[in-house]
Image (cartoon, rainbow, N blue to C red; front, side, top):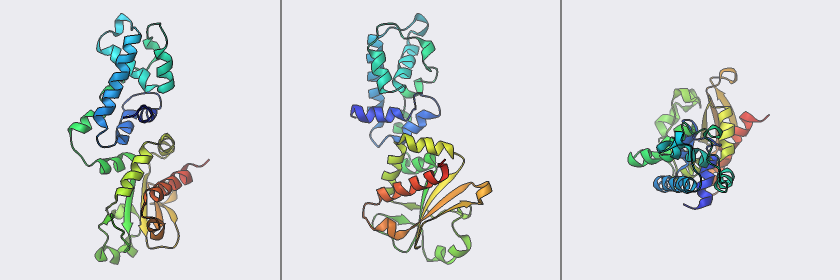
Length: 251
């Protein structure tokens, strides 16, 4: 893992490692990165503790928690603290939950799981492919039986989703998970589930369900042509998610 990649992941903590921010970082770890990220955290903690003393009240394991809190504060802060000579002051750092950063991703590494499905659930962004045009790589449960009742059910996710999978969707989710701006906007509409629905339609539409005044789901219907014009669909998926969030959070 390169230093730039490590610190981009740390940026997702927004300065503090706690029960809310560490899962966000873990969701952004690519397969195979869990152990290397944990090693990098430990290396930075050890380096800081070799340079800076801690008060006796924070000796032992608590010293690592304190150093991890400094790492969570970001690259510039860490490097600035590394250059100082005075002991670390626990009062300056939110170290009580920073132990979470020391083990970030390790539990997920030990227990195999559906990484993409988990990431979609964590981000609250879901894909449905409701079109007879299905490019290579896309898997969907859409079929004639579902299509027959589609006009009745419409796009309200309360009536059930049409599961779909696409490696390009995986890439788009990963890119959003690594973007602090995505998380800032997503937090502003945390109570909404977001859905990208690919359809045989002429134009994109944005709808709220059950209605705009009591929305639980927001659905962006995207023309299938927008997703099949380029074999690399990741950017189109990213644009769809960004469109939804900007529409929902613009001032």
